[in-house]
Image: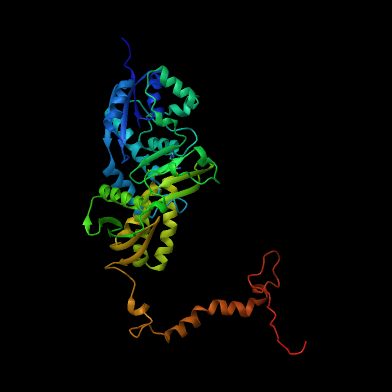
Length: 427
Ligand code: ARG
């Protein structure tokens, strides 16, 4: 009796690498391939991809619409956290990976599979994110990463495809490597590898060049409840529709282009271009709302949390207890973030021009310089006296050090005395 063949669930995008994998895995590992194509919002013909998988030789081809889950469990929590990697990258690709890992693990269980497979290379962050997540979700699953394992160059891969009747689309001739989902588009390789070269216009698909954007600026109002955007211009929308709307709107005005020389998890610096109109608009608006509702200390602390959170997502540690701890803080902190931000989209920029919230800490009577002013000016005197006490005493006791007279290697924080100019007559 022949033993039953093992099964592997392959994350299938329809591109060259994973198409070749459908043929390569059975040759190398003698397993049957089940493909899973996951819709995270990239515009694609999912039926055609399914057909293609079956035609190449997959035993089964599954398509999963995960857009709502992506928004609810990954995108919006990252927005609430203020997660921008190195302050600029909204993490579209990075956020998709733990969800893809989860769905692979789910399907593997359902299909009684022994292994999962993905098309990541051995040089990027994505292999780490997927493998680490899978090890948490189901350590029993064997992980196969064909592109990391086979030693084929691009040309050899194309030859392999042609020999095995795998359709090779003309668009793979493109020098760029791209990844996209609802939250943004990532583009790397080709001329972008030279960090001095300005990205050619052809790399952009979602955003207009600012110079071709409409001359008329447009205004949008985004309403948030607990830090989650719920309506645009008073029209309530579900998350997917809201993000799609902002991607289109922002893209039209050239908003959302990012040029980032980033620090990869695997130790190298890489140059990446991103298009993320919705993410850029929403992060900008969300931060402005927080600025109105949170105290100064809370804001300072949130910046630290945001940076940690972004690192955690980027570094593939979504499924970790540390993440749960950070989420607990963020959710507690976001329960007050209700309000509306008004923004102007114009020629590649999105600018906050108005904000309002029922929980605002801004008090016009305290801020105004008009006669309505209720701020107690005379109280400032006592405040300054106490507030300045530590440095006043320090100056009395340690002036020599402050002036740098006893500094060894450190430069003084105090500039040398500036000679005054005496204009005495008849020199
Ligand atoms: N550098 C980004 C990240 O690690 C995006 C990588 C996406 N891949 C691509 N082919 N451009 O999250």
